[in-house]
Image (cartoon, rainbow, N blue to C red):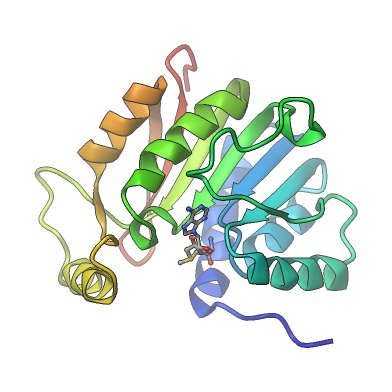
Amino acid sequence: MTQPDHSPSAERNKQPILEVLQNMLAPSGRALEIASGTGQHVVWFAHALPHWTWQPTEVHRGALYNIEVRATQADLANVQVAQQLDVCREPWFAPDSELATPYDLVLCINMLHIAPWVCCGALMRGAARYLAPGGLLVTYGPYFEAGETPTPSNLAFDASLRAHDASFGIRQLADVEADAAQAGLHLCTRHTMPANNLLLAWGRRETAF
Ligand SMILES: C[S@@+](CC[C@H](N)C(=O)[O-])C[C@H]1O[C@@H](n2cnc3c(N)ncnc32)[C@H](O)[C@@H]1O
């Protein structure tokens, strides 16, 4: 069996993200991960939160192999078979599919800046559609914020992303909030995270937090 791809950044941030999720989430629920990448996050979270069921997804079919190998090696009963999902292909799931059952958490780590901007609105609409009442969308990554001086490392990261692909780049939090509002979501909590990242929790307007 070929070893799955490994992401050093996922290895570094998985525990800090888990610690926020552990404080934020109910003891049990259903989670949908968007852009699961190597599967390192979903396996780590599923192990630490065994009463949650985790549904990994990825746009790239080849990445599904990584997730499946990791989940199989970890022997976790609470990780579902990884599904191909492009946030921009709406609706995400057939209405009569088990996958369309509402989720208590939609989790999206490090996608918004490494995907075209249209993916942000699509993520917000999809999350609004599939979140259970009181459910949360959690996004993690770097953002630029009005009134905050960007760190040199985030400016350099943004420039390198845009040089690689002009449709990528660190997003303005205000623009993300505008897309969220159009989808009926609002920012519930903002957590500062290591390496100039933010963990943001978004809920429907009626969701108090
Ligand atoms: C930097 S990687 C992050 C992967 C993983 N979440 C992590 O933090 O290690 C960006 C991810 O966004 C995914 N992505 C890009 N465009 C997407 C789309 N339209 N729908 C869903 N995922 C997308 C890529 O396939 C990739 O897995």
